[in-house]
Length: 238
Image (cartoon, rainbow, N blue to C red; front, top):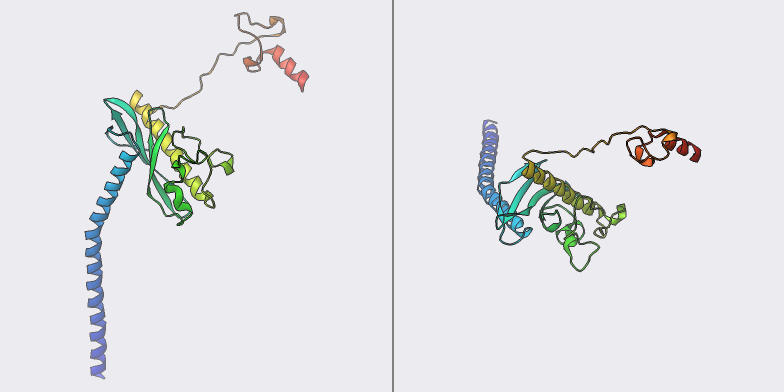
């Protein structure tokens, strides 16, 4: 009986030792490969930045804009757009994309950094949207911001049988454009600005104005409905 108990304890001890050694070995391998993986990601990121911008540009200091990274570029000392690292959730998981914009906000190029889309379907995002032979699906040279698949009323052909992946990709590009505009505004003003509509003065008038206010402004639909004569006309049309 004692011999049996001793054998059981030795077995358990052996298993524990083996598990600890295996876990330690795996942790060591992970630590060693982690640096290599991170280095490869950095290299891929740098290569993507250069691929989506004109040749010979110089990069400025990277900016974090709404959880996206903007890399402003200059060429011969003049602003030359920017590369923006963006992300959106696709059918299989996050899509990480690098998008290049010229100074006017047109798309120069894009590179997919990471994705988990279905092979043969959603993974076509890598090249589908920059096929020069297919203008309806090619987004290069276009103004971003409102890119939408044709199924949703837009003018971009989605990947066949991968509409969700296509929507996510275009969403990522539109987000990148918004970050580009935000950073572009900050670079020129020193602070983030929001555009607010300018309130026009309202000029009161009545029927006897015969088409003009006393200050010379025409009395028509542009008065915003504050013109009594205009309100009377609207009432007659109802």
